Amino acid sequence: MAIDEELADLARRLQDACVGRHLTVATAESCTGGLVAHAITSIAGSSDYFRGAIVAYENGIKESLLGVPADVLAAHGAVSAQTARAMATGVRERTGVDLAVSVTGIAGPGGGSDAKPVGLAYLATASARGVEVQRHAWADDRAGNIRLSAIAALEMLLAAADAAAENE
Image (tube, rainbow, N blue to C red):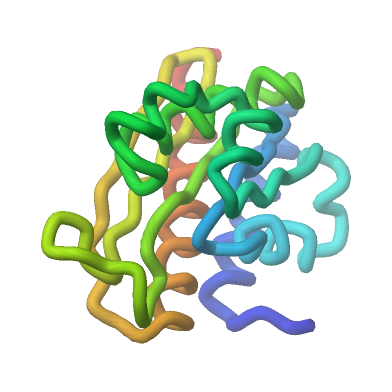
């Protein structure tokens, strides 16, 4: 399945940045359902740096495969900065990569609330430098919210790759 040109361009740029710097990457995805990993693996040669992905849609999978603490999920919910942080850290630790990204959010059209509306997404990158979290409030339909989250995740990975290069 083909991806759109913006996702493909970001994935190509990420591959160039990571391969040239010998950086490895993994993803932990919820609301994007693997779109970030799909964009990355749509580019020939991605196996030179991409190690894998965990699509953890259900909270039990977030806990068992990514190590998100049950108390974090209970206190903050699946769509939170705390969960995004734990997902990115968990996938980085479990795959042994240099850079990891996580995405959790409410793509819609249902599932939102006043406190957590449709379009809310939290993304995090984890690296040797630590964890960075971003909050986004998209205002698109389900497909658009998913796509925008995937774009943001790839942009965060690019920034993390650039930051890793500054430490060389």
